[in-house]
Image (tube, rainbow, N blue to C red; front, side, top):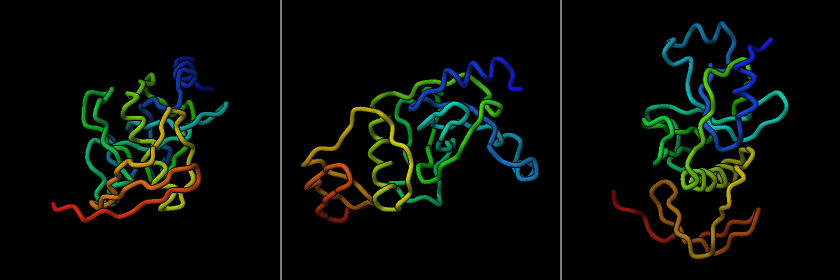
Length: 169
């Protein structure tokens, strides 16, 4: 069975926390990955009795993701640079946990939540949302792939944006 401390860590896990865990891969797939990278932080989005729904984190940017599909934490509980892949969902069980979970700053959770909405709207990828008091308001300006958009309307399930102009980089 799962060791007691892993079960305790699992019980401490909540949406909006980061937890270090072994990658949820078969032994065969794990063997192809550098041992230093087999254990990484994950952002918890949801939890049931036996599993966590999570997004993977990395210490470097994700080159293969579009700008809105990833977030870098501004106040990192791990005290390093942490980038989150918001496009792909993963499932963790208690056996995979390597450490106790740490809470992510509320301001970062709000930013993550906005990106999760965009990934759902633009990529049609379903994921649980974080229960953080968000949300957007009419008049907000969003940046999506270096283009600025004005939020004309935001009601759950309907996002109405007006393109402003291309940003110069």
